[in-house]
Image (cartoon, rainbow, N blue to C red; front, top):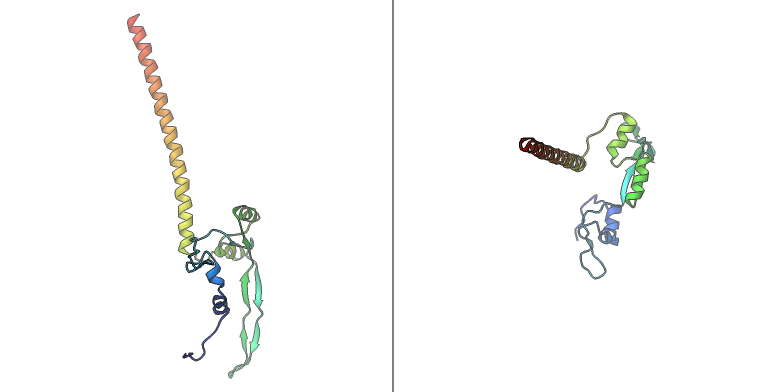
Length: 168
């Protein structure tokens, strides 16, 4: 088999060879012990939440690397501090503590400016807005129906009162 020069074998290649991805039911190519599809579709949990103040941890410290044109400063590699929640109740507790469900929100908490958010988050926000507006519409429909019923009963009582006056 031909291996191209400078081919990188990453941790993800090793994980795939071990079958880690195939065992995760959130992945479309996952299989159970009988070889049948174990895919359950996109799953809500586990979910990552990000630090309330957008704090970061240094994964790899910065260093000086020698180069033909002189030493080069390699900056540190950082990641947002995160935690994983396994259920809706656990997520609710963490969100009350201030944890964010999107990294852009954590970065905004740290820097004051929000980086662009992906379309999936926009869709989620719009769906929540539609749901809230649908609830408000139902509430207004109920108010209008109650008002129409009240007006009908008032009109009926006026007719009966008028009818009694005419017959008297």
